[in-house]
Image (tube, rainbow, N blue to C red):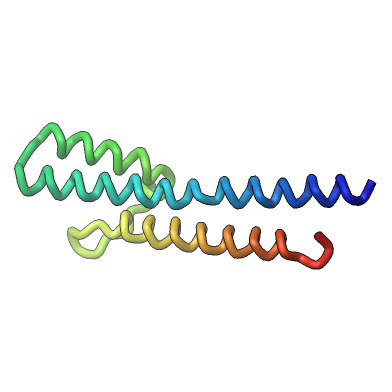
Length: 104
């Protein structure tokens, strides 16, 4: 009964490793919204600017409750990039360590 249990535990770690890529998807989505926001700024397209602003608020979620401001510059998306990257690295390394653990 130990072999099926080990296989199930290993499969759960692999599933978690696959789900950790959601942090990369969130990182990429925010990058696309920032680029769209810059495009809206350059072209002065008000509709795209409003869409990008709403997308940033949606993606930031809890981050937008306490914005990180320096003067008039909002650094919240920069903090979001940093946190998403750190979460991805930490979760990936943890799960890879669990997959190759000696008890597995």
